[in-house]
Length: 125
Image (cartoon, rainbow, N blue to C red):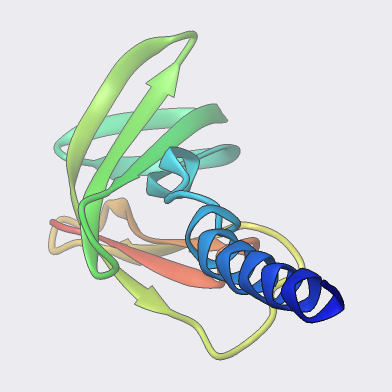
């Protein structure tokens, strides 16, 4: 009888490990494909001039290397364009923006730097 109970417990443990391995892992989190934050911006993006102010930015990831950036102000879409994503090998103290100067001498948004994800989002011109 003791042997039978031990066999049953061993079988139960094996089944628990097998089921736990598949069901214990979290499913792919949809929030990992979308990153939202607010950022102070000023400059040109997608042919639109952004006045200095706080904008909501939503990045939707197609995969680890590319996605789409949506810039909003007062819940209204100002610009939406494709982007490339690169991992950073450094820790950032906060989210940030890198600007460039175009051939007309106007300031444009080149990169968005994401602290929490340790990524550089390259804005397509």
